[in-house]
Length: 175
Image (cartoon, helix red, strand yellow):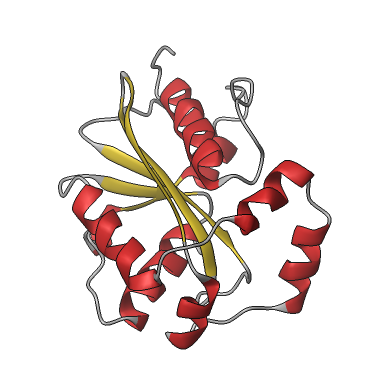
């Protein structure tokens, strides 16, 4: 079985304070890429209170999980985030309208991001048929190992870039 990356793609990674479809988002990291490599990036911190005000939810188990992560990963919470609506509008402006959106899990990043758009009355910038799952692809091609991680684990931008680089390798690209 062969997999090819055709056209434009965006890999998104969210850091959240919950794990359900309406989780509070603390940061959005994304990279634009194609079969030849990463072409651009997006990274913003979100004000958690603005998420709660929009009806998104936090859960204690995820907050406790964050407390056990590295100092570098937790340091992101010191950043003052922008209002959710501002971040989503900026992501919409940055997003390549002809791109597919990849997330790490069929029910996580893309679903949470879509729910966030709905919570503030905005339309998500990708078409419903453009949702893609990186986790599915890495499971289908276990013999193609991910490249060495660059950056900080659980940093939304670093995670998105790592996932995109791995997907490019799965598709037969070169880094």
